[in-house]
Image (cartoon, rainbow over all chains, first blue to last red; front, side, top):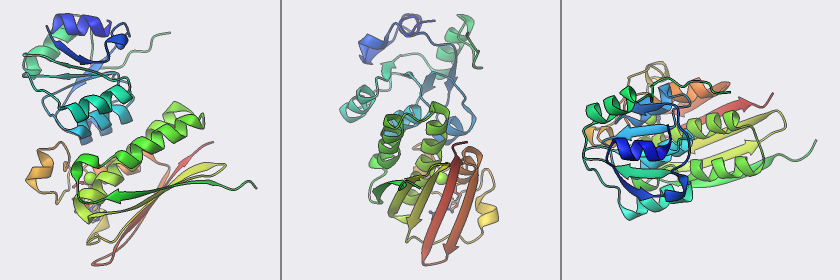
Length: 118
Length: 141
Ligand SMILES: Nc1ncnc2c1ncn2[C@@H]1O[C@H](COP(=O)(O)OP(=O)(O)O)[C@@H](O)[C@H]1O
Ligand SMILES: [Mg+2]
């Protein structure tokens, strides 16, 4: 699905990088533990998290991710938004809880495992 | 043999917010050199975990990344408390990080294991009360 589909499905507010909404993504992960993301994630392009600090942006950047969804209406500060903008990383925030947000994306075709697309 | 390219960074131990700046910069530098994305990702993740460790456990230090012809070498040196038992520290889940670090998304005891996972070699020199130097290599071929 496209990043714009994620925004629509989660009824999320876009916080930066509107130019990147047409990008396609094929898998996602949800975690509040950044070291786990760094350890186990492979080619997941989207991170859903309830954690808000600059290290979340840096972790996504290290993993070459393209979009972060903050759940439970969590909001990054301006510094974090600028950090994300520097990297073309889309940030959005949704009222949904982690479980519901992940489930909604999953049943709409965004899986947890990276799928190879030719 | 051509001179190796060296990047140096001071890692500020005072603030957790800026931790990762050196790794971000390295990622950019390596991209400009046109290295394969998978190599860049491995180097920057290993360095990022090391940088976080220097900030949360050792009050900062020096980070050097050397681009050799056949590998990328990452050297992280601090003058922190040192590591008492390296074998224990290398185990997944072992951590002495305080709770406030855990609530920031780190301190799960995955840092050193991650550094090992993403590099081709890791060497840790440490002395209690003196400091820790970690050398990691990611092969280019
Ligand atoms: N640079 C360092 N200086 C002193 N102790 C360290 C350093 N790096 C790691 N350690 C010790 O090793 C333990 C394990 O490190 P790590 O695997 O990165 O887990 P974490 O950082 O989540 O605690 C740390 O909790 C700490 O006790
Ligand atoms: Mg660590």
